[in-house]
Image (spheres, helix red, strand yellow):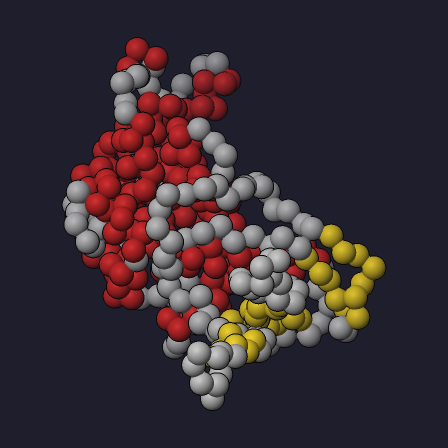
Length: 340
């Protein structure tokens, strides 16, 4: 991802002899603020090992993400930053990246705590038949404050990230994965985009106030409270409206792998409503599992475009990333019949 190989070939040694060198790559700075810096670097796990025949040798590296603060911070704050970084790297690599081990230091001296910390929900990376490809690399960050923008949106995106990873990498039924990714997109739009039809003050004065006053007071208290609640939330965009806006926002990128993707919006909303709103007699039990996967991929694609936008990438760069991603093209051929 950061294109910092540690292995090099000594060109001064003539073939058929060969000498290979390993030198630990220097850390790469991902973010540097007033009192916080984030670096990433590999570290050799052990010396080269080989089987008894001496033919094959292997080197194993650990990838370290270092969060360095000039002032003392709560452990929860440092872990939040670490989790945000691993989430962005997971999106970039399209593979689940998780901190397996966390070391805590104060003034470069180890503290008397050494443990593995887990976020909630805990998800496990599963086997995938998709080809491995990167959505963007470290070199693509040049001139774009990606980690600054991402960390600025860290709190707003916290539940969105949790739902996204639960859908993409969690051990869940296919319907659960679908509901999680739909809820993630709705949460993203609710938190990072405008989502009301009228100014809240105007809505309260012109719409909500008169309607609430017109609700009969003799109704049962639970029914009265339910009607009042629906009126108060009536100014917020529906799921269908939010999807239309996000699909339109990223249409150029979506057209790279899913032309006319907006035609699936009504299907997505109907499927979500099938679980939450419709009576049992309207359920459709003949939905093919592959159809669920197609919709999950499309929703994941839209949300990953949203994540790239939240990280500061322009629409043109997002379209470029989507168009050149091998795994996206593989999915496009599988779900929409597009040839790379």
